[in-house]
Length: 145
Image (cartoon, rainbow, N blue to C red; front, side):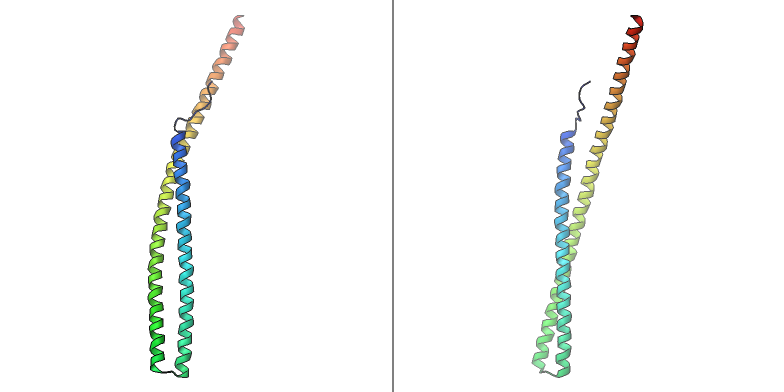
């Protein structure tokens, strides 16, 4: 009997390469999200530090001009945090979209994998039938002789 050959092996390999590529892209997207989360955390800590510093300066007394400088600085920090939060949302959405692509590609690849397993099982069953037929024929010829 001839050696097992999966006729869709090339397609399966192609789908596997696409899946691997998408997994790498998804990993990069997740890393971008994590970097953005750390940046936001750092900015929030910095804002908290400046707010505490501003409270100390207010208690000790300072000029209106210095107070305005602090207020404008805090407002700029809050705007930057809002901008970075929006960026985090965008990156998270991109990561989720890539995750959906990975899931779909994984399902496609699994379908080809299951088909390959089914064809291999059919091959083994056919091989067993051929072997049984050979043995039966051998026994039949042995009885005649």
